Length: 433
Image (cartoon, rainbow, N blue to C red; front, side):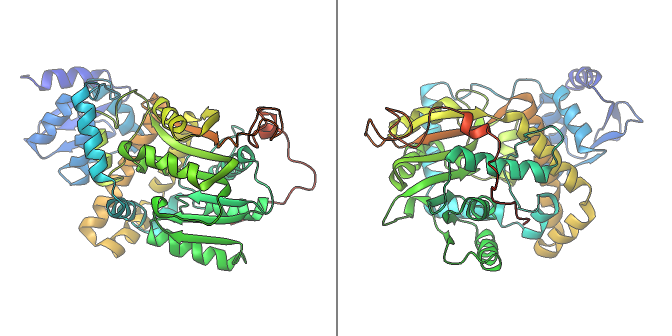
């Protein structure tokens, strides 16, 4: 067999599950009767597979130039064997590459472009997302406080985990940046009694949350704004702020503006939580092997990843103090597999929804992209190519005697016990979404 097939066959032999690769001419590599089967109709797909560019192969699947048969879980197991290099690479370590990344990031993250990018992803279809998200439609990493939790239970545990970290109290002014379908905003209002404000760039999400506020009798106490975080102006800063799953959309060049905006909107002594995906490598803004390009093209245009150490530097430069950082990376792998399994169980209904909204060609491409995206991201979190950090910050008030301990200069007690202590008797009962 002539190269590049020889190298490809050697990697197929290392796959933990049998796989059959059908070449454009009809020949095949690997196990002819394997349950997992990739049929390649384009020589470019052969070259991509041979080079280990699995993200590029994913794009070929979305475009219909490669068909796969079998489960996406098996496909991800095989993908690891097909890689030729670590996707957490150091391609941006040289100064000129870093400069190029910064200028590209700056151009891609204007207020108008960010609004366009957010609507590209989040306005695909509310009914589509509802098929595989939990009842609160929380579209971010869940928190499996105990191993036996369902996805719905783990998402409620995550919302409560953040509320407890923020020490939310009745009557406090609370801001949720990038509020999604309102899970955090509604949970904090109903279970902690806050006066809540959410902001989003998604028109679909804005309309959905408006409806939820009215239906749940929260008008006058909770509001949602269709607005960019950089344009939010308030007469009085907020007591507490959360930003959940929004950090990934900000862009490296906008990080100073992002954290300085959080600092501006947070009152002295207040607490803010940044819950976001971080890079597994120190310098990469996405994944190699074509995976970063796949996500940028089909899922999150403009998305960029930063290592947690970069985020911590920007937090400090903005005048905020990091008081607690928690990595819950494996929780996101389990969350994504739960989403993937839920979507796979309802493929016919998902296709019906997407085709009705986008037409047959576009609808089929969206469905193929999301099948690969959810399973591929689950693999990425399992492998440590990406992580998920919750970073709790304060805006020190400069008063030595303020706070629960001398020198705290904030509401943070510098003790984690309050986060994990059992709920007090008489706590607000949980309301179903």
